[in-house]
Image 1 (cartoon, rainbow over the protein chains, first blue to last red):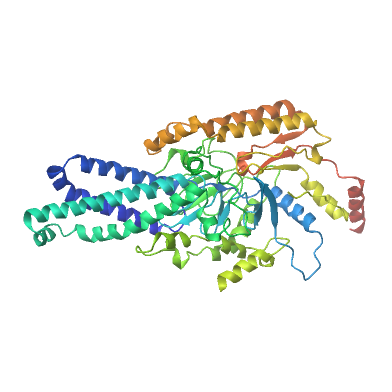
Image 2: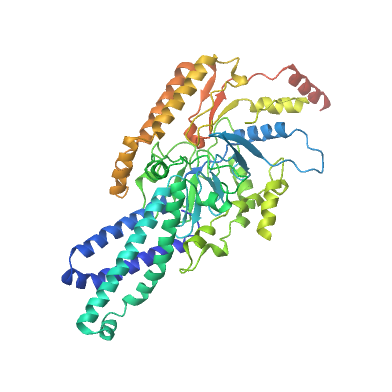
Amino acid sequence: MARQKGVFYLTLFLIVGTCSLFFAFECPYLAIHLSPAIPVFAILLFFFVMAMLLRTSFSDPGVLPRALPEEATFIEMEIEATNGNVPAGQRPPPRIRNVQINGQIVKLKYCYTCKIFRPPRASHCSICDNCVDRFDHHCPWVGNCVGKRNYRYFYLFTLSLSLLTIYIFTFNIVHVVMRSVNSGFVKTLQDTPGTYPFMLVCFFTLWSVVGLTGFHTYLISLNQTTNEDIKGSWSGKNRVQNPYSHKNIINNCCEVLCGPAYPRYCTVLYCAVGPLVLCGHAYPRYCIVGPLVLCAPAYPSVLDRRGLMRDDLPVPTSAAEPATNSNPVPQTTKTTAPLIPNEHTPDDAKPSMADSAIAHAEKRSPSPREEKLPIPPLASPETDAEASIIAKDKAL
Amino acid sequence: EISAPWTFHNLQELRHSASLANKVFLQRDYSDGTTCRFQTKFPSELESRIERPLFEDTVKRLNIYYAEAEKMGGQSYLEGCLACATAYLIFLCMETRYEKVLKKIGRYIQEQNEKIYAPRGLLITDPIERGMRVVSLQLLLLLCVCVCERETDKEKHKDR
């Protein structure tokens, strides 16, 4: 769950509000005059939508734990050894590792915040301040990143919400028509005034959500992420072809939607202040109000099944791993303090309801921003040639 | 892949490297895609510690386990469809196949550590703790940094 939760509460309000009005004002009439199955199906669909929404919002998207100091230093030394001695005044080359995947060369970029070379398809979300595996996008409506672990829940949420919206909208029209046939159109409007604002909301939501579902269906059939689509990673003549695609729509869909349920890498506690990501020994970023304050639907599985009460848990005491350096806390503050200015909600994170699905998808590209993060020991991110090109593009 | 030929220009570097040389990292093998596999290349730092076949056996076994966990077949589809039909509430009571295999992997690593690695002064950490990015092997007994270090320290004492 991300820190800026306002839009998520709006989503909840809109869904619950619209459905409540539908159940209150239209279902009785429809149940009597048409069939009681109509509200029953609507209720089932509503519960499914809510379950998927909560599952998407409150599940770990696939956060990659940050490198422990030893691993971080090991990687730094490898980079230094590869780059050799850079003459003073010259930029060090960008930190990139080339790997071959299914016969294609893919570049793995180094994350200055997490101090790791990001696995393929992972990306750093500046809003959540984590690297996320198979990063799709950060969705403010859901209040969380969408990544490997929760992509299918997100897709099912948009799909079921499309169905629910279409269902409610259709039966609303049916209801108005039936009443108008009996008592006239104007009287119908006078009898049930409360539902119409929400029906308007429904109408606009319909286009956005259905469009978004369609877009994600397209992405799934090609086994691409929104992030890759926006960056055009696999399009264009001189670019590599998507090495992850099975070249078969059914196989791609099966992999994304019916693949195994991937495990969590980090233990996440949700508390009143905001999510606290505990990744073994590393880098907690927020204070907590007591070690086990859980708010919102507390999934039992949010607690680490291997046992939450490992020695190295809660924040303030931050027991260090015996072999690592003895001060994880100052190290934490060193990495977090400079990051805080970057962690602003982009103004475009709250699209209007009438935005098209594509526009909605396009707004989710926080990854170029993370290049302006704290200066690592050997090279500044500003000296990263690739990053500076991206920064220039953004500025234009 | 980057290979890291560390060249030591001075004692500072040697000391710095030696104090950090107590962990060896095995990287992921992405040649087949994003499914979890680790490189079976034998790191040079372990040459004096453990026999190559034992090490390669361990890594290959781990790769087999991960392949089993991530295998897409009848059972995973069935699990997925059943879970979807129950709005994924079934995962509150049931353990996923992946988690079962992870437990198996945890037990395997512990067993390997007890039988093979700890007697040789090594300790494998479960890659799940590092986001499946690396398998880290900790060298339990630090190699003694040489005479040079002691001499430098003697010089320092003289200066004081």
